[in-house]
Length: 517
Ligand code: GAP
Image (cartoon, rainbow, N blue to C red):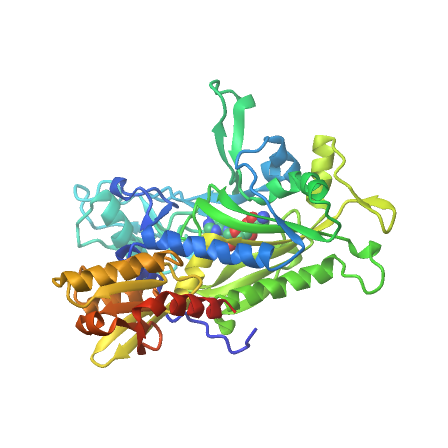
């Protein structure tokens, strides 16, 4: 992608989070109970966006191709699935605990080694500061940093209010190591922590009843490979796609919906011939790997992500997951910086081979052209729905100066826009105008999602719809009663045209169709 890609996103995460809350897109999960870390709820507008993202993906994977089948497998699977896939033994993050006052837990590989010195609190009085006085140490790169730790963390959590705090360097304490960014505490040696969430099936809580909430949708497709291939009479190459919830006990869920503990994935397993079995001119697994990276990049651009905000990072050998021999991460310039949006992996025949071994079932493919059995290779594009929503919201977010005012508008692709058309009566105290607007809205609803709104003045109604990305707004005014025509305003250009009320549905439907291309 473009070499000149900007390194800073044009919008910060707080702005997106606040818009999402204000406009019914996304709310913090269990908010009235002070939330549950790593969970979010999609509001009336957000769920439409999410559905549209899923639909756009499904269309491009299933309906617009003839080599991929759909599937919906159960979230709960026989636990041997996860033993076979390697998730029980290797799906873990290295964890370290702070020995500082917070006792916070961190991903060890997310914290760099730094040179630090220990500082001791010395002249806050013992009564004001019984925990810290003369005993507790704060590890930091400088005295200034140590004071910041003290003020931000210790004062908040221990209720210490003494302003006269002074710190003293602990002699000979300077050394390199990993320290908590929150309280300066030394971090313990990393230990592996499995990310799979467990639950119990049946009335008896013994280990035999333990099942996992799936950490990826992929395994549902591997265990159904033979079912789909035989029932749909498929020859290689072909894919199986599905969309659904996945769960991971992420240690540090953060950055809004970027990394959560419950999330949704859209994944596709594409079964193909490995290189050594291919004749000249045939696409082998690595050719399909390149194809799927291009195909997925084109999808992101088609639905509104800017080319210069996308790039591909090819993982080095030490970054690869236990099942893959190559992986291209499609990265996006999120408000938090460049980060993985989607992964395209060459999973080789690892998963099918493992399931053959653990289940004892033959999952080989019989190739009639080669007159031979073999285990297909797999290319897997895997995208998070929530992460895709965050990317689309980010690139759609626009602030414009319109005369004296700032206009916030979500320039979402029309296919992704939650509401396609909003209808307003210019005067809500004129029953004939209200009736005409409501009738029009009922008519529009037969073809796409339209809403009627009369809860504010026209200017405010436009602003609200701009903020959630509604491509068309229609106003019914006094003249409409005479000429049976209404005003349609387009979101991005703000251009208005006058059109017969009986033509609006056809006009908007045609504009939406054109946008799909
Ligand atoms: N089946 C392969 C797989 O699951 P992954 O890279 O772990 O690979 C694929 O996940 C995609 O799922 C990621 O690129 C991301 O978009 C999304 N994803 C993964 N973990 C997530 C989390 N904790 N929260 C939100 N999205 C997540």
